[in-house]
Picture: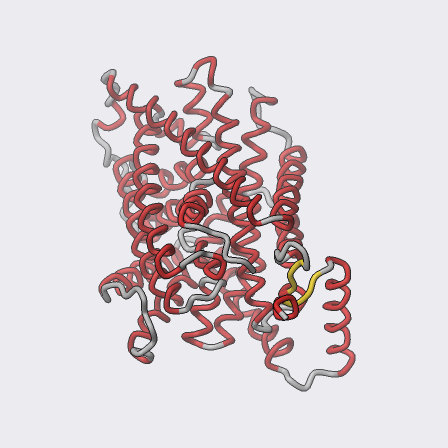
Length: 463
């Protein structure tokens, strides 16, 4: 695949993916588990700082191991094929498609909300539009990388504009003397570690995507220079934007209004924008559309790299002979996302996804510390202070451990699903003497995909 992504594209991909459904959905979850406005703002600030530390640690990993695939490539390098496969296993069926499904559903809810002003849009209409949107963006990603980056640039600018409207309206309201919601900001603060961790789950969900540029390192121009620069530009920008946006929410809306709303930005618009309140669902829809586009682009490369390493069917490692895009990987991911679009409870999904993601990010940063000790002579164009990965590891370990006491069911299901990947690995990958009929069926499937999508292995194209 070609190196077509410049620094501006890298910044737009990070900002475009991060600023998506989360800032318009998660304020309710953060406030619910924090218990108070003051602690909710602290969680938003700390989530941004934690994401920044994580992104800097990943800058070292991404330049030390300049392969697309992100966590998969790093876990494979540090701990070998089985842990890497387990990451790929949960990413394929939980992390990526569930995150994409949440974003697509949020897009559909907001774009349809003006058509049903006094009630929620019908379940079927929301799911149908979410499915159509996922398919449309998959087609764009299959067709041309430059089209993807143009879509990303336009919608990233649109979503930043939408957040600016919220911030300006909130600051104006604050300037007129409305400070009543901040008179006792710590009232009702939740102190149990499990609930604090769940508050961070909702906050970090809004920041998820800070590591997605590492998935496309091979397509980034001058990655040693542009990867860390893109992180250092985009992460402070996102953190500041999120914190002031939440302050604007809390200035205008009461705690009860936020907790009762499934669309905080729309509730804010109804209260502050008057006849222009119809613009807020449109802007939020644009935001989530751009986020979904970036996530589809970046995550498809993860599965492409996994298949190239032999951990997924070889068909997923094929690229289009004309456009040089990983078409089978994109289509396969689209199909799984469509299956998950029908799920109704978004907040359970956020906790579920956040636990699994925190677990494997902890493993990745453990790999960074492990390779500092076991492979000290590896070339490291970027080398962060050892305190950063240690701090990041300790906080991630807290986020993985304490929700076990609060969300036992989600954590148990997630761990059980991860463990199910072990027999799958030994049957499909580690078992070298497979029966002839099984190997033949794999080969027939790969050949069918190559003919159906007019694709070839990447090495064949280069030769």
